[in-house]
Image (cartoon, rainbow, N blue to C red; front, top):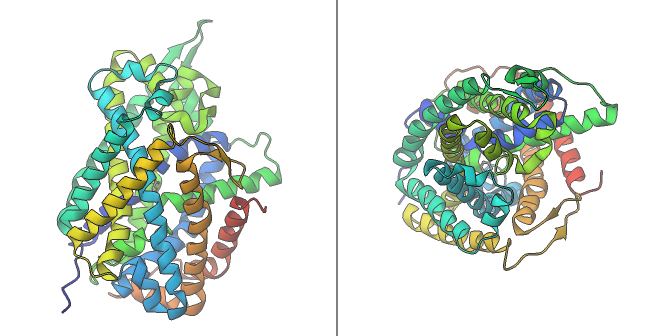
Length: 462
Ligand code: PHE
């Protein structure tokens, strides 16, 4: 007995759901600090060129695998070629590993949203606030439970009435918030102790004008690799998600147009996240403010909101609401990537699959929370970073397994099935996949090389 496979109602539902997955913490928190660190406009140009070539190719490859096989990542690869079944297994292990810690971070965002909403945003600007929150024994776990509960509810509701329905509400609100906050950020200015006024536009120059200061050939290559790694993560590639979502796209939908829109959406939000954050940090913390790196969102931004005075409370609340929406639509896509495999391969019902995977993610997520107190330790990873449980899970999934899945996907589509496979699937209704020559060159040669370099760098070999 085979039930009809669930699907999105059309291409708009797919675009919003996939953009919901792609737009996440990576766009809002990681992209701005990489741009500030890597030469501003120089990073932006490199990122844009890679998005239109490398990103476009990998995204297309995964979506066509999904729609062609109408299968979850766990089953899709094996259907296309018996020798590639293992890729599906790893592509499903990645979201399985990411979900617990992504939901822990989602819980942190929820906490910040609630604290700004209830008018205690100033507390979050105190030194040591973030550290004492994440090392607390119960609160991060409570936040994790609520955050994961929201995602599980949406996934339990299914593809059309869950994922699509909620993406159609959350994504338009998110984009309005992003635009509104960006416009506000451009009006900021402050006066320092010597009476000099610093304006947001000066901050925008740091963001937009390419800086070649200290850029040697080696540094340039490192920036290219930063941009490639960021792009790869930002488009939710190599975690089974785009295969799963692609499998719910109706045959009549225009894939070529949808893929372009997803890319534009993801890149625009990343760019605007920089507009929201870089000038604001520049105005209130000076040029060195961006050096905060990873702690930017939870440590520096609350200080920036506090410095804005009364408006800071409102802007802080709206900002964290927006980040929360971005995190929910990403986390639910990770959950779906695993649940779809439980449904397709293990023949579980959607309800059972959702409950099972959420329960496992909860157990592992609690372990991640305890990694900051009860089980605290420090481990040096092969790429030189020092981390706790969260960082180790992040390292194995993002830095090792994801490049492996993506290299294998390139070999499967580029060499085994041949690029025509993608052209045919994307052009099912007579659509023309533009950039065909580029796609072929990328999938066969350039992307596997970039991905291999990323992998070797992560392993500490390069
Ligand atoms: N693409 C998301 C982002 O940019 C990252 C992500 C999505 C990570 C889904 C894991 C799962 O933040």
